[in-house]
Length: 401
Image (cartoon, rainbow, N blue to C red; front, top):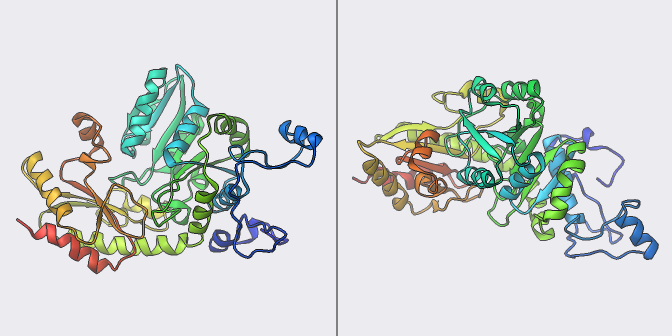
């Protein structure tokens, strides 16, 4: 920030608005956007010194950019991380971490309840003989039992997508530390406004900034956060030479999104609780999964490590067969006139999707069943509309025969 105080002296909402701000000589109030692929040097000697790492300064936007650095600095302040590196998407963030921590012959332990594309990514890396074992998210003993001599990473998301299962981060972090293995946490659903995994023992945090960090469905982006040694010495070479680079335009949009993050996440959480409570009372709804509901299996744990339930909920519809359950789910989706039918989330607009045929559709039926993704399951990401209107929209499909 352009003042004499360090970020530790400011609270979360102030950091969300001010952290990382550096004004140019023009004195602009809103942060500048540096749309440039490269940067000029004062002389041949200066260029040589910058390329050799002997002088500070920007060289090429694949290596670094002032607008991208604004976003990285601001998000690091919010997550309580020493360093942040931005990427082009959430999946490129996960890929970069995986590439930085593993090599041929290594092993990863991952929770069963993760985003379907994350599972596909880990499966892709099996062609390089990097194997992945999947364990129940909420069972620390299962994590311990799955660790092998060649395990190099523990990976999870909490709450999980789409079942909103909650991991005991302190317990799993203790397992990771006993074995000297980094714990990587996808904090996409909560964001640092509701949960800070590094403070609970995680080593690395990843984000799909596309979701709630942006908050309005405008741009793609990702981020990795952790200690300076890992970020600078282990991760940075992967980013520099593989090039999963966040554009300056997207970085500027994401930095502006962070300014309203706390307000949005509080509103999302309040509305999601209203919708989840309403769904629990609807005939034909067999189960509602939302961490702030007392019926949620990890309700007390969620309350202990999150400051809000978040925007995402899932609910299971009744039916005697898979075909009946899918038909019931699709009736609800097709009955919506307000909710957007899209697999994305993190928007001010509420979205609805049928995970078994979209986000997890490329998984085998057996793998979906093991992950708890049934044909009657629907995921709703509650936006900023009036929750009464969201409930009325869902009621159209729930009331149809």
